Amino acid sequence: MFASVLTPALVPLAMYIAVMGAAIVLVAPQTGFSLEVPELYLSRAYVEDRGYTCIAVVEYLARGVELTGVTSLKVFNRSVVPLHVSGTSIAFALPEDVALLAVAKGLKLNISVEAMLTRGGLLKGLYQVVLAPPKPVVKAVNSSLIVENPSCYPVAFNVTWMYAEAGEPWRYVSTYTVVKGGGALLKPPVNASYIYADVRYVWMGGEFFERLRVR
Amino acid sequence: MLRIAFSVVTAIEISTAFLYIFSPLIVFRGGVEGFYSLYTYNIVFLGEAVRSDVLNYTNSMALLATLIYTSLQMLAIATAFSRRLEYTELSFGAALASIPCYGILSGLTTVALRELSRIPTTSRVVTLAGTIVFPETQVFKGPTQTLATAFPIASAVKLTLIATVLYMQLKALRT
View 1 (cartoon, each protein chain N blue to C red):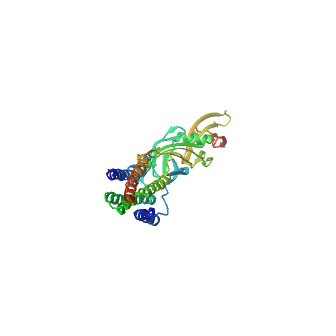
View 2: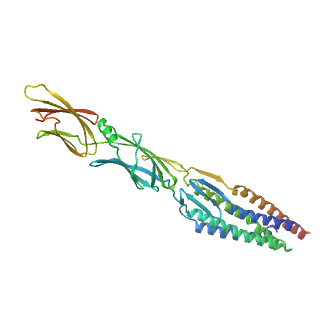
């Protein structure tokens, strides 16, 4: 009696389980989604020497996100205006006094960036750039002083001119000049029979002194 | 009277089943925006729409399970009023489909929750570029959890009623 009651009752139940079981097994997907949090890596930060101007560039390796704008850009805590912002890089001109100070003391450039990203992201980064400017060259040619500094990094030169006529005591005149992006021809401020130049400059944390016979 | 009560409870149970699949299981706010229900979903992960085969699968299976289950419950209501024992037995069998239906919906919910847990909710990423901060994601549970409790209660009441009807018919047959 109990079995005869259950037999018709099990038909709709068995049908339901069979249909749903087959559908669940046959349609089941093999893989789910793989979502990754967008990431931004520092590719490199460097200073591009454009002769008269130093352009600092920060390049990123982006995955799923891009730069849209810069909210704050500072070098040694001094705000600078970006020259160019692309999806993966920021470029700005290095202020002359900052470059002068960095090269004189041999400091690494401290660049801090706050930027807006696509997908609602915000980036805060602090980067250090090692500077490697070529050493300036000072020489005396044809009664003049030639100071060569081909890099975009300015270097300040203090020149003390020593001059005298025969039998007279030495006299002194000091001049100051900043040279970058090439060379400078420094003519003696006075005309005398004997002229020497004491050239002093600070470069990459060291003080350099050269005495040259100009005439 | 028992048959009318059975029909009413079955109707309530069907409504609960549809509410179960239509109402949001999880709601996201912030970096991840959107919702997931067993019927459909709309999830945007940091501005990018999320498409998932697993979530599509759970949606289609939940809809299929509910539609077939609804047809069987309509059959159960239609046959419950018959005086013939075979029809009452059939009605009982159709009513029993609530049990696997609830099981399937619960299983699909588990699968969907497991898939949804793979959505990253990290709002802070630290790389060599610095710290990247994305909007934080808040996750809220929808009313589905409550409906998941109401559904088996309605099923239990319904099964008790139809079993009582069946028992009374069998008792009448014996006497």
